[in-house]
Picture 1 (tube, rainbow, N blue to C red):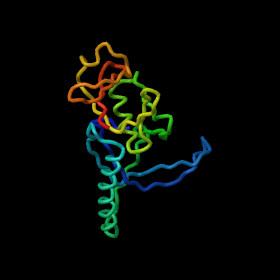
Picture 2 (picture 1 turned 90 degrees about the horizontal axis):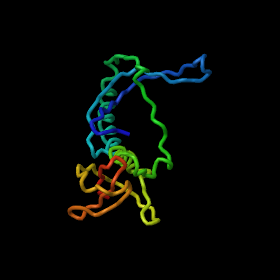
Picture 3 (picture 1 turned 135 degrees about the vertical axis):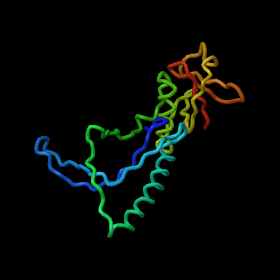
Picture 4 (picture 1 turned 120 degrees about the vertical axis):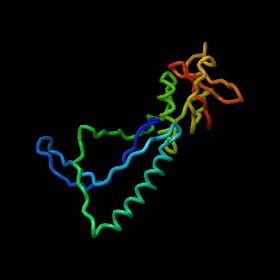
Length: 171
């Protein structure tokens, strides 16, 4: 799940299988042959980031293939101390916990779009939330409990989060 301002890295690598005699498992290790980074935006979603990565990556693959006969690739070993693992997203990640921070909930909604989509329950009905924005209007949430929905300025739908901040439900 990418936070606004996160730097995204695309890394193309040439990897090799090896057998780890300590764990008894086959593992994958990589030498990086290309890396690129850029900043994410607050409204980026899994869908928009995948489109960006696909566009940038496909252009670079074409460039690498066109120069293949005349080019040797610098091989930079992957730094395993900087490598991270992201757990598989499941249906258990979908329900919104309004006791969480507005920042956390907003990022959950972004990460789960376009699939599997975040949801909440309102008047015993499941409501899918597709898009949200962080709002700096704490006075509007005063005296309201986390998970309280209300219509605010310009007939926008807001919800109070566990940290007292608001999320505007855009879609």
